Image (cartoon, rainbow, N blue to C red; front, side, top):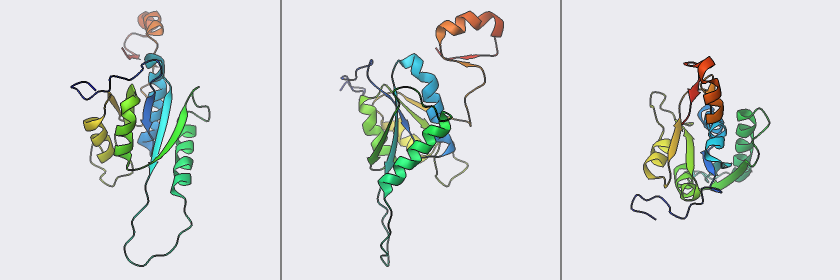
Length: 178
């Protein structure tokens, strides 16, 4: 690794765009942003959902619950919602055991970009960033894109060639990503 903490062995041609997915509306927006950014990064999307066993105190009651299967369902439903049932080519869904922040930071070691929603299912409505997005932004080994809002901006152009062709007719109405 370099002094910045970024992994040197990342292959930009194969490195994925990792997206943290928890099924929340912000994680669905993060998936959409990853879809919009994919042509610029020339990578594929790796939708990552994590799960953990819950620790219960007190009386133990056996529960027939498969957290890994539940995480797979959450990831698949979020991907379907983000892309209207038609995910981008090459999208892979991954389910890992562990805390969301720790899993995403580990995934960042081989990613070219990590995309997270500004907040997930946490209970503090007024916060601009949730605990996971903050931890990932602080500790990731690659650049991090934090998606805010409820959807992509209208007129978003992610193809630089298309932006230059449309520049004259749509100046001021497009959001062009460099």
